[in-house]
Image (cartoon, rainbow, N blue to C red; front, side):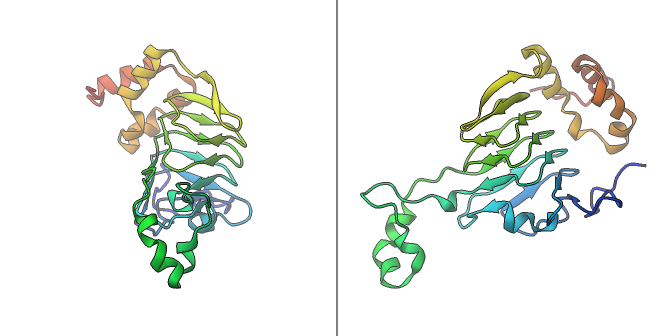
Length: 218
């Protein structure tokens, strides 16, 4: 039986696991089907505890089938402080005359933009993602990594700041997987080929996408 992507707790025996799509309420957080968060303390507090400084218009966009370990944090652009002058203190935040005198400074600061996570991305324990970062499909973010720059598809990164450790597949195979885009297949087809998705080869995934007319043309 295929899991229900609208179920908050998809694994009855493990309430620490939640699907994020039915959990999030903020219009500035977009999460795809089957992406889950695992936290033994408070998995349902993801929006408040794991998406920080979300004051501005920037969005956090996370694709389908991502696995997010406990303690992973997404730092949004609202946490940025002005660095155009001698002080980085956020006077505007405290309102009153401070805000009146400095609001224009904050409103004209450049934004780092949306934070975008692709599909089938695995975040290790206590990974941190900085504002405006784009993480490609199939990437792996090692435990404790601090991601300050974009991560290429199917690349493993780790460290502080996070650096590429290795690419998971050859360039040709990465191209095959991205064109196959299995995370967008119908749920029943994913179920039938779940074993191949876990243990097969990019060529096998590509053949399935071609067979069912699901391969992307770009």
